[in-house]
Amino acid sequence: MFDVGLGEMAVLVVLALVIFGDKLPQAAGQLGRTLRQLRTMANSAKSDLQAGLGPEFKDFDLTDLNPKTFVRKHLFEDDDPYTANGDHFPDEPSYATAPAGALESGERPPFDSEAT
Image 1 (cartoon, helix red, strand yellow):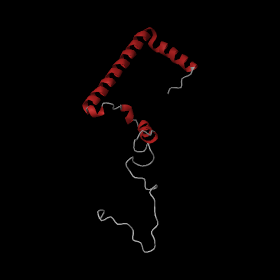
Image 2: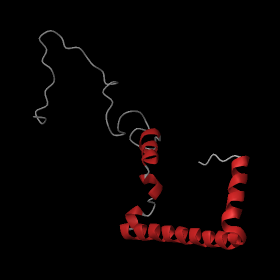
Image 3: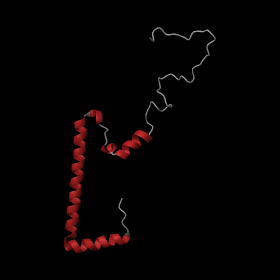
Image 4: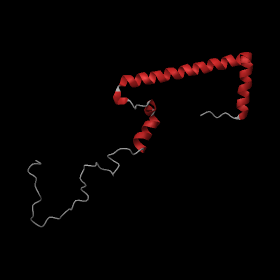
């Protein structure tokens, strides 16, 4: 995420010492407390959202709303029971394996009176 080398890190440390001086420990402590509060607020908002959605969405994860995660989950993961055994539904008859008998000359095709 961040591409910071050793030299750049040293420059950042020297810059922090110059800017904050002897107040660097207090500034670091305040930054830590602020990050902890933000994390607590985010977790609280997430739990409030899950509680508001109801028990149907108990395993709802906000990271699923990320477009990359959504596409990866729905296009590249094959946990769909309908496509697990091929490209057809489990209860669907397989027409490819049904015997296709040729009709003799003058023979009428089968007719289902209930289908029309």
